[in-house]
Amino acid sequence: MIDRELLEKKLERYKRLFSSETGTLLITRTTTWGTEQSGYIPLEDYDLPRQWKEYMHSTIKRHESVWKNRTIDDDLLPSINPFYGIAEHSSFFGGSVSYGGDTSYHHPILKSLDEISTLQIEENNPHYKMLLDSMAYLQECKHETNLIPSLRGAESPLDIANAIRGNNLFLDMYDREDDVHNLLDKCSDALLWNLENQISRVDAIDGGIITGFGIWMPGRSVGHISEDTSSMCSSDMYERYGLPYTQKVLNHYEGVLVHIHGLGAHILPQLCSMKNLLVVQIEADPNQPTPLEIFKSNEKILRDKIIMMRLEAKEYYDNRDFLQDKRTILQIAPSCMDEAQELVSCVRAMHK
Image 1 (cartoon, helix red, strand yellow):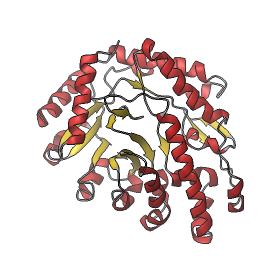
Image 2: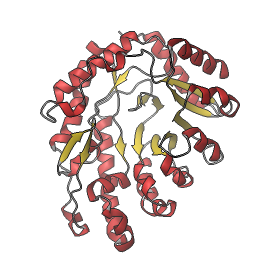
Image 3: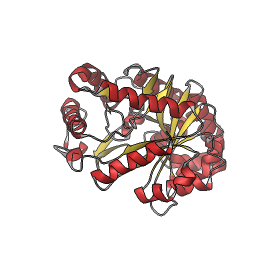
Image 4: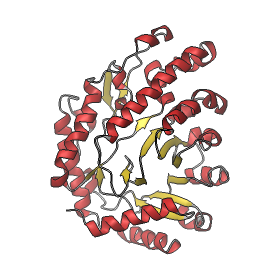
């Protein structure tokens, strides 16, 4: 059963973070040392979408085991959402999906930009319907599981276009600019449709919503929207083909969490110019500066955003002075229970 008093304390810390100029929240990525994978069966071992309910049973059981044994008073919320890879973010446009590597892939379906007019949302596409059915199922089970159903998240219009057109999209940007804009306009409408479908299947929590990262955001917010394709185009190209269409979506919400990769950090000036962007989640990439290094080198650009990032415990301790006057949500993987307890104490002491 959810400890309501503990949950309310966590939510109060989120509210303070979003309403103040400084603050740090901590999410310990490993606190039960082994129970996270108890009974875990890889996504690709299921016959999806046919066996979606069996997969959700396994997911619920695993989450219940984690939260039963979770004793760290950090800021991760006891939430749950379906995860079927990344194909669910664009499969509503039709086409084939494959599962492997514990994720999924939506194979490009737009062979030519001449076919844009034929591109239609398939409301009953089995791979996308699986996502919505799973979200509805989690709502049905919430009183038995004591886990709060949350948003799954989605891809930006540029990411959706890349998924359905493939990497030919980058040549199209030079050769058929008007057609690319038409495609992105259609993708932004599809993203709004996807997000609204998800919002209708989760509950408002204390005047806000819980995102797919297990964090609370105030008002009519959404999270996350991924901007992964920014890693493969210049900042100028992103300003032309990414920013206007993501902004079109952000205009519909009070706050949005956007996810980028370290390799796409060059778009931060454009990204942070967007209205209603509240949280920037920076994901680590191999052979790139760490998220913390990216934060430090873009401090002025990011000064009015909440930054969510993974970092090592040593990075946190070595950079407490820098983090002191910032707003951050830190994802740290402690090596043991004692280190986890120490991290919680330090973060709490930083912002009493």
